[in-house]
Image (tube, rainbow, N blue to C red):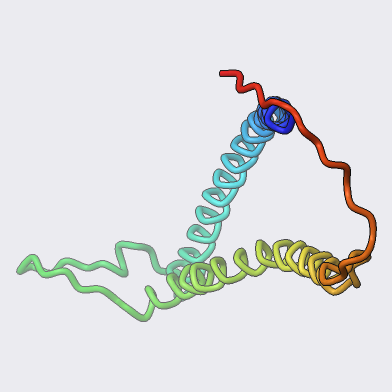
Length: 153
């Protein structure tokens, strides 16, 4: 009887896992499109920051252009005005420096809340007093069951 119950439990478990997998597949497709859109938005944001920083770094300072920043002399040597590049790349470096920890903070905020709730539920369950005393010899005991075990492959 116990062996048949285990088979029934396993079949029901497999059915539930398959049903959950079907739901997860739909969710994964939606999440993939959302992640792709978010990545695309990040690329547009990066392009906007680059354009803004180049205008601030190159054109706003003294009205210069890229040709003024990169000069090639008669010997073929390239001369770069790094003062203007600092104005151009500081906003980009700030964005690259702040974006990863900021995104990790937002991701961990929801994870930390869920983890805290799970820990509270776990410790509440572990700390409650048991209704059964495993060291007691008293109490009720089940009937003796005799029979044959049928194994089905």
